[in-house]
Amino acid sequence: MAEEDGQLLGALTFLHERDAIEIVTLDSVIENRGAGAAPLGAVAARARADVVRRLFLVTTNDNIYAIRFYQKRGWDMAALHRDAVAAARLLKPEIPATGEDGIPIRHEIEFDLILA
Image: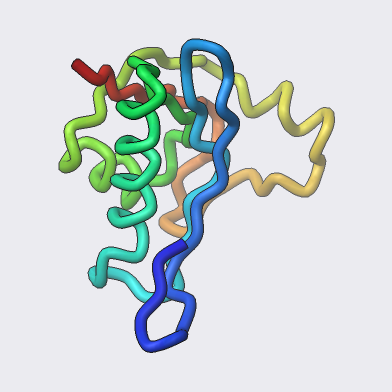
């Protein structure tokens, strides 16, 4: 979590598997204050301490802010899962057809960060 003066600014959840850590959620209440970057850095530090070499996450093609955010922090696009959201909608029909900017939500983009 990221907080300032007792106020929650952001939170991250992750799944630590044997040889990788998956970032499951990253939420920030206030943007451009480190609310996303700080928890992300903390998980990377934990991964290094646990000798985990790979962090990864998945976002959708419409999430332009997240795509920019992760690339600015050294994450790399590792895979494009075309039309993967159609399968996700079978489990979660509430997933909207379009995102905030009117971009159709269709694909999942996998990002990873390889730690040295």
